[in-house]
Image 1: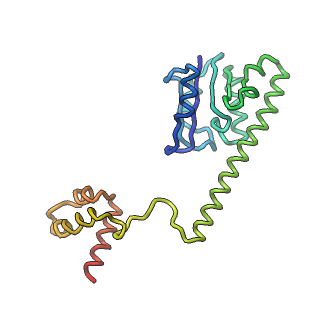
Image 2: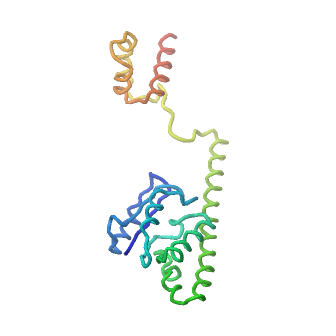
Image 3: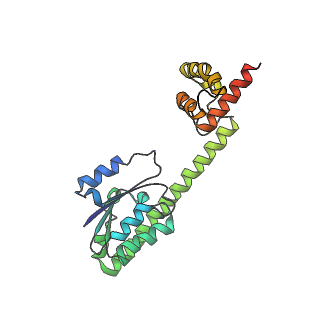
Length: 210
């Protein structure tokens, strides 16, 4: 049976490129497993689900080694568990010439030795790349903070509201104060979440009192 495993680092990333590859290989949708989270560990719900259905002789396709994971020891452990304990095979599409466990299996003990060497090398490279990414992120955050830049989502304040939001605020503020409309309704009208809504109203009230 053909199985496909796909991983992207976050919910914002698109898995379509990897998914298209799996479909071109003729893998059924029900046997394609997708996780949207970091590759730092293997505690991923769909990865675990995939391993639970793997049987001897199955063929697992993965786009690139770092899609399997980015942890040096973990990659080696998981690879050996799938190929040796579960008796399945793995093909890494990005490095198919080197990483097709069927080729190593046919070479017996020598194949295992060669597979271990290649796997150690490439998983080490994958982990080093993860470390470099984290270092670049840390350096970028430090630089942004040093330059006084705000990180994360843009802060919503009274002055950042649109003209239509300001109009809604001005036309309904007293109605809310007089309990003619509820806070929940007012929030929806303004399109704001609870904490931001009360922060904006506090700012608006302070400005009106000046």
